[in-house]
Image (cartoon, rainbow, N blue to C red; front, side, top):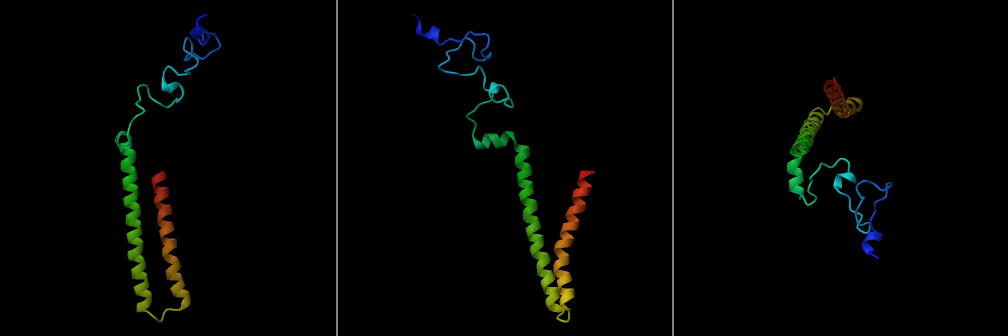
Length: 122
């Protein structure tokens, strides 16, 4: 008796990818049957740089986001330096006024972020 015949799947209830194949292997006819979002002919041995090159728009967004974060950190450092200088220059400020200045800065940043979010969603 032919051994390979026992492992052949020609049944009507088997998936189309496995009909007529050696069931010991269980290989699909294409990788896109297991990964629906995968395009036909995609090479699985792509390196990280090749993936980034294919997705250069995403890489550009990532680089731009990192520069925006760096800009925000540097602006925060600069503004906080001038707030401290202002408070030290006027020692006659009451505790309430000094607290208002120190708390007003983060609130102002939050309000600006809120307005930018609203402007970008319209």
